[in-house]
Amino acid sequence: MNKYVLSPSILSADFARLGEEIATVEAAGADWIHIDVMDGHFVPNITMGPFIVATCRRITRLPLDVHLMIETPERYIEAFAKAGAGGLTVHVETCPDIVGTLRQIKSLGCRAGAVLNPETPVGAIQPALREADLILVMSVHPGYSGQSFMPETIAKVSEIRKKLDALRSSAWLEVDGGIDLETLPKMKEAGATAFVAATAVFKNPEGPAAGVKSLRALLG
Ligand code: DX5
Ligand code: ZN
Image (cartoon, rainbow, N blue to C red; front, side, top):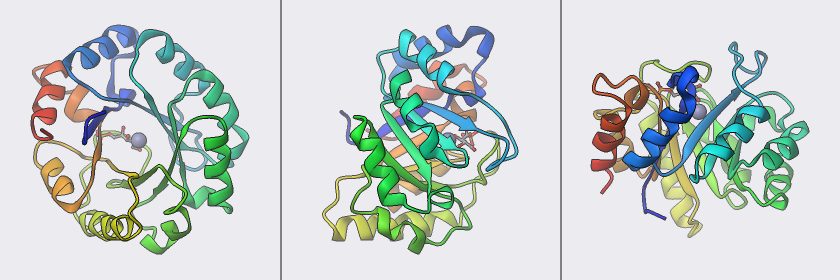
């Protein structure tokens, strides 16, 4: 596994050609495939369920990086794990027992991630730091692709990087929202190691392969 990973989000892919879109980013050097699950409650939008995860599992060898923007995620974790998720990331805002939920994810053989929204203080992730295999910092309000990057989240990444290093944690530190050629280096500098991008990959004017290659080139 690379030291840094690029996880294109299929939220901006052309779903009429999902298989081709995923094959294209895989061939271009994507490391993971990010799947944004939204329930219309925790976030205003509604997107994909376990069925799409199972479909992706059939068409790529890449790990599926599943981001659950749903209420009571513990009710659905098993279904997503069975569908073939490689990692499941749950929002601290939706988990009264974040440590228990992360353990549930691990018990199903998946990489366990905890994510916090832009307005959620870093303290909220503290209990998850020792248990999580991945911490995700949202750099937009979750719900839609194509939003503007929130620069105030850079400091949050630095703060969490310090905490993970102090614990000698090897957890991934992922960022999601408005990641492009300009913002990726700033988040990398702050200590991020995994980068989600929807618009910068699938809406790249030169196509998704060029989107992946240009972002990956910044990651070494
Ligand atoms: C937002 C999703 C993101 C989104 C990113 O709620 O979690 O993964 O797809 O889209 P861009 O890269 O366009 O900001
Ligand atoms: Zn996401």
